[in-house]
Amino acid sequence: MKKFRDIEQLSAYLDGQLSPSDSARLESRIFADPELDSVLSDLRLARGILRKLPARKAPRNFTLTRKMVGLKPPLPRTFSFFRFSTAFATFLLMLTFAANSILPRMSFGAGAPMVAQEAYGISGCDEPCSPSAMAAATEAPVVPSMELAAAPTETSEDTARVAETPAAKEAGNLSAAQDQSQVQSEAIIPSSWQIGLLIIGLLSAVFMFALRQFAIRKWK
Amino acid sequence: MDETALIHSAQNGDLDAFNTLILHYQDSVFHTALRVIGDEDLAQDAAQEAFISAFRNISAFRGGSFKAWLMRMVTNACYDEFRRQKRRPTTPLEPDAKQADGEEMESPRWLADPNMTPAERSEADELEHAIQHCLDALPTDFRTVVVLADIQGMDYSEVAAASKVPLGTVKSRIARARLRLRECLRGFEELLPSSFRLQEEGNS
Image 1 (spheres, rainbow over the protein chains, first blue to last red):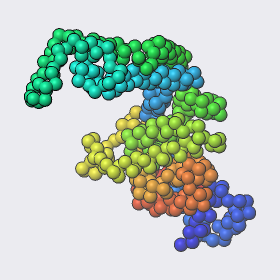
Image 2: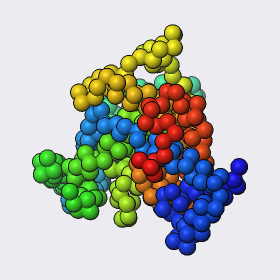
Image 3: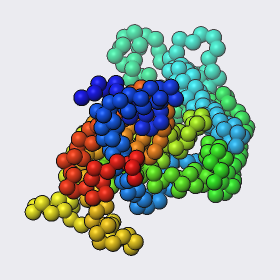
Image 4: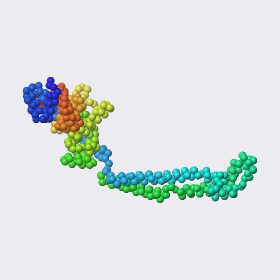
């Protein structure tokens, strides 16, 4: 049996992959050595049989569809601009809604106990008390201080009684309404801004849709 | 067919141009997959996968032999198929080609060829079965290079590019594969048509 190096050379020789000088050298060896010639015949036979193998045609067409390759229509550069502006405008719009609804409540919530105290006239406010609280305080019946001292347990009942008087109720309602209107008038983001953002978002979305449709139609 | 122009168009996303290339190469791609895998249905799957992969990666094609590049896709798809088979081995529902009594079922694809006589059909069928049996007995790496070189007629550099191995390895694998095939085919000497018995290609 010949060395594998020789067999490799013979196989390459058969395929014309040797340089002219190597081919000439190998040919002289083959001529002198019948065993090399026999191996060459074997290799040639194997190659010949493979080459005689009937070529099989494809049983069907392998052509691709756009769906198969997940192809999408090429969109113009402006598409990404409109996509960004739509997303950004929507985000800002949501932010303005959040700011207008959450922030005033936070400030209203912090001031609520003060308002109630002012309304019932039991606050410790010395100087700038609201006019409504002042009115309530003046209209409400004055409770003697001696009674308060003698019967401390009745204090809360008296206070409740004070609060139940129609004047105090009216004062409380008035104060709450005023605060509510103050909250509404003090919206952090003006509604004109919100409308502007809404228009920008909608217009960008419409342009985006139109560009996509145009690109798809052109692609088809 | 202006192959370069079609490739350029395909690189710009023109699927129709790529489909023209597919129609030109689909027979050799399928034939290669069939000889490497040895199963027609799996070979169809591999060929389809190869074309999809080729389209998706065509921007990576930097010139040279497009056929060799395409054959690399096919061999990759075949290797993927082998790996899939190894993970999930399947048993065909159809009866095996070889029946219980040892007689082989007549292949309908030869019956479909109107130009062949029954004797020629039988001869071609026997030859194909014998060769495929011997090809299947080769290690996958050897089978791939010998299919590309001897069945597809590619030169060594193209085979090296298609199978992603050095030229020296290609040379060695082809030589070893041919020797093993010759040994294997000796066992089918009786099955082989008379024209292939002890015939030397150089003399024909």
